[in-house]
Length: 438
Image 1 (cartoon, rainbow, N blue to C red):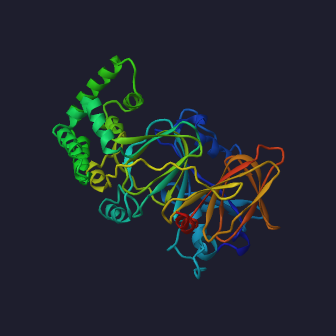
Image 2 (cartoon, rainbow, N blue to C red):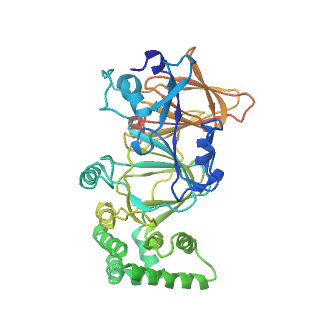
Image 3 (cartoon, rainbow, N blue to C red):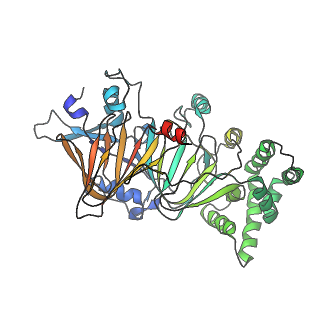
């Protein structure tokens, strides 16, 4: 049992850096620089290795550790324990679960917070809703390793963030079928069915025709896919003025030659975001991040159903079956300005939200106390997080911390620095106020 004295303070976090192949390499990766800074030089960046994701949370695939005083040490040193053990020691204090002050493993963080550094496109993927996640976990626990859903929100940290997300409007897909005969040939008779559906203009449900075409495309024979990709590559190599879509297809072909996912932008929306732009991805929606640095917050899950642009397991049948087949462009937002320092990013679900707080040099800002645990990450600048007369927590680039529910702190930016920029991830305590404003 941890002493009460240590239980309500800010506690430093040691976070996991995931080195997936699509990540930026060495110190070019924001993830690598953040991870290195957490250790005051104790973590050496491997300049030849990719750094893809920094995980801050309690998911077992990338558990953060929390630094607490070692009361058994005579030197006043600290020790690391899993964050999940810490929060479950007193769910009422740390998680805001009323009446649950005894240790319990029935409660956990509802969210997982990440930073991504993307050099190569991620797989074409979707995340299951709760019902499907539970089914996949039961049927294939070696592949789908938790029973939770995974809606998520991405916030761009760079001006070059690109992604695919959701199906294009039907008329755009129809136009692309005519512009890319190699894809039309790949899907065979489906192209005629699709174009005939568009021509009818009777307001019929597009889902069955779109689902069938996507299935035929995703399940196409590899040799036929590669044949048509070769034809496409040759045609684009001779084309004088490439369109934006042409250039994206060429880029994907260079990264994953011969992969059927190269055709995906013909059907999916192509997004280009700038710093501060954000979009939400609900359950069962197809997407793939292409490049850039982002903040990402999601429900606490690692369930991914993949079907292209990846050397990992492709579960085409599950992906085809689960998608919503909505043909709409995702809403791009810049968050909601709460006050002069804080911008809220509030998705339409309870599991998570983000706050980005920017404090000018020499100024201060009081973090609101909420009935939710929080994790905080300093993105820029330096200063302190002050909890009354109890504790000053030093904040600088890369430093991460956990803050218990119903506690607050004052952010104080150093006078001679560039100001202080901190992101806070938490359960979605802002959801009701957002819905009331709509």
